[in-house]
Length: 153
Image 1 (cartoon, rainbow, N blue to C red):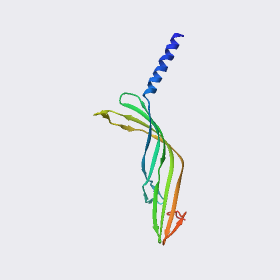
Image 2 (image 1 turned 90 degrees about the vertical axis):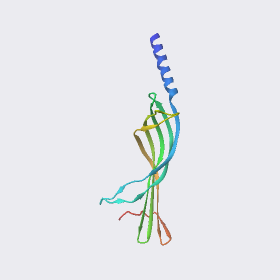
Image 3 (image 1 turned 180 degrees about the vertical axis):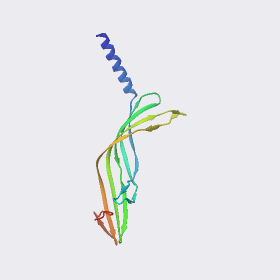
Image 4 (image 1 turned 90 degrees about the horizontal axis):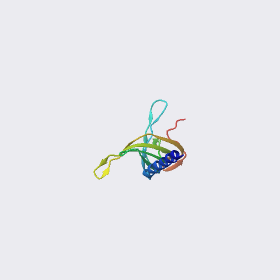
């Protein structure tokens, strides 16, 4: 019985000491995304960058003096823009998909001067949760909504 008590005490102390080292944070930033769209004949649709953002929470779990694992949960917007001019009609299509992302970064943080250098690498999982798109066309100064440029009938 006494051995179990000491084992439980040791495990609880180790977990609380490990949990005390965990740091939580907020992460936010800007995304510049684009897409490569290929047609069945092998040609590519000329797309442009769209600016989006990401925001969420992260944790930093140390696994050594200079190493840690940093998982997070982020809301991310991505997308692309497509413009086409044909027969006096200029069309624009903006697509903005929304994702929930779960990145897991493996961090190397060696000391550098008075601070630390942060180097990270790792995978992420993403799940599409929705999005929005906007299509418009201008013909001789008149705006036409809901036209999808570049789609051949």
